[in-house]
Amino acid sequence: MGVSYCSRQVAEGLTDFQLYDTAFNNGKNVLLEGATGEGKSMSVRTWAKENDLNLYEVNFAFGVDSRHVIGGWYPDERGGFRWEDGLATQAFTDPDGAVLFLDEINRVPPAVSAHLHTILDTHRSISLVEQDGGSIITPENNVLIVAAMNPESSSYQGAMRLDEALRRRFPYQIKWETDNSVLHDVVKDERVVNMAVALRNSPQAQRFVTPLSTASFVELDEAIVELGEDPAITFFLNRFKDDERPDVVEFVELYLTEDEPKEKPVKRSSRTASSRRRGAQSTRRSRR
Image 1 (cartoon, one colour):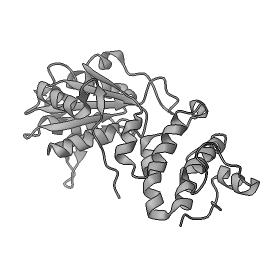
Image 2 (spheres, one colour):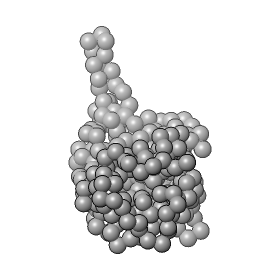
Image 3 (cartoon, one colour):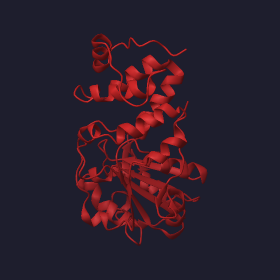
């Protein structure tokens, strides 16, 4: 069961897909800044698919160098070398237009950052210095360039500030906030939706390090169908740190346990409560 995506509003009277349409047609770059698991990547991939465009995706969290972005020479089977275009070059030379997605752009290595300055410039270009001494290529057709990153102020491991010279090259900058209304579109079990909203709005959640992402609640919803409630809840709780888990258990038992009141958390036996806090085997009965 795949996770679906529903277009969301990113500004007053403007959806993400409408923004991509405008950016694609006018050669403008888009920057999405928001927490992990909130659908930034899915948004770009879905738009590309719906518009029948090839997607070229670079993730700077995985040791990317200039060969991945621009291109480089690689050994061939004859003992020589062959040139292979990088993903940005492939996007620029795609005759049908394309989408270039630069994920975790704030982790771009300095050696690659210099190339991005020209790729993202108003007059987009790539210099193939390594191939033939410096020929310049420009997009053959429209290219939507979208970059994404976690919030600079977040506690995510490896989070760092985006170079200001790169940031200025994105005229469309979106703060991709957690949007509870999206849950109603992508989560089928209303109990999971209600729990997610309540948990996100709770004072306890303010101290969580573990993100309360939309993706995590979608996966809980799917796991309930695929595995049953007890295993699904166990795997969901295992996401959280030991000091976070007891608070999450309160909301799980309030919203996902059948025939229990919805006004306040129920009292649990010490055995059941401690089992869930550990994220171990759930002892709660299965729903009939």
